[in-house]
Length: 317
Length: 138
Image 1 (spheres, rainbow over the protein chains, first blue to last red):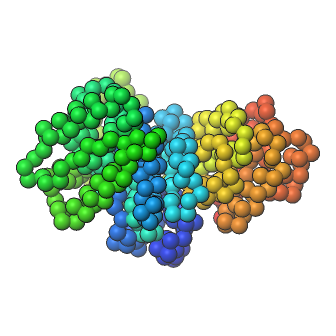
Image 2: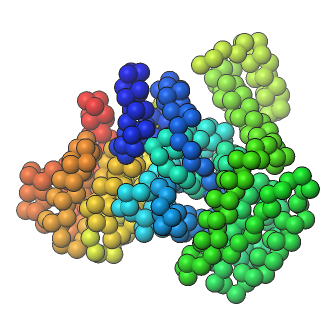
Image 3: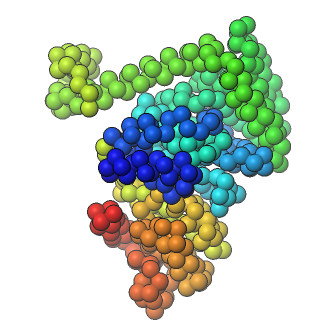
């Protein structure tokens, strides 16, 4: 694809052409030089905020994404959705099933849903989703919802790129200690207790509110709301959307809290790890190292690869 | 710059809820290294075309056991073309009599139809070959 074609595609995306947006999203997934051209042509266009929706598998992320989108549509906003599901580590293929639960959004021309496989990547996926959100914003979507896999390191990396992090906790799914271990509570800007029609929901709500109060910082004036939602009964949804809009507005006047600085630092660390790993895997020594697996100590192998990397001199792709 | 996996939309048009076949195909295609977007049951042609457009798929797989295939399959094929998605390979499966199959593939823009008992390797091979040919010409 030549640069003139990419420029035309960027223009079409800005006009809100859905087919162009879909094709541009494929380019993003493919990577390489066209992505940089797209970035240059489109960064700065669009004003929507990116909301990362995360939580354990089965917590209710897809259902919540659906009801939040319906509420945003009622308020006259166009919504982009990026739904990430895991790739099969064996075949590299994927089964992307988030659309099943988003049935009620199908056919609405004010909604654009794109499913993405995580390809087992760490930092890479974060970059891809950030670019995808940039495209959707440029195409005029007022809010982009990024629904994550729900587990693992790639998930936390994706959360790092969002403007607002929404954590979904189902009632009775283990205890609050699970949330502390997962480390997601720290980065959450809005916490939702899903399935609030269940009898054990109030207890979960209370526990999470106590935890959030505990980690409140004096100079951090955004107070993280903990809100109950039932997607089945369709209650509490307006409150969540108010919180998301409220946080987006709050960010306009508070660009650099410790929470964001910390998130940016984590993001840099992950990007560094990912890029270093990718670069090392390009070395001739990587293939050799793979043949020595199990025969030599992993630390020694890693050390040798790092030395080879330093000697090779780093060149841009 | 890397080649992305073949993207396939698997959908069930119409009103029958028998999705075992669609799920078996979805898994087989995933195991063959493809990205499979599964929409579930009860899809109208409009919903299928919208999903195919948003997901920028190479292949649309349609499973239908209700008997409404002569109405729904041509509608999906026509609407895909109207939406500028004429490059999509359309593969159908389900309970479709041989004479209907012949009509659908010769006159209504369906690329291939597979009935019960088809070896999934055959479907995978067909999709790979057809998508490779269309990607090369686009």
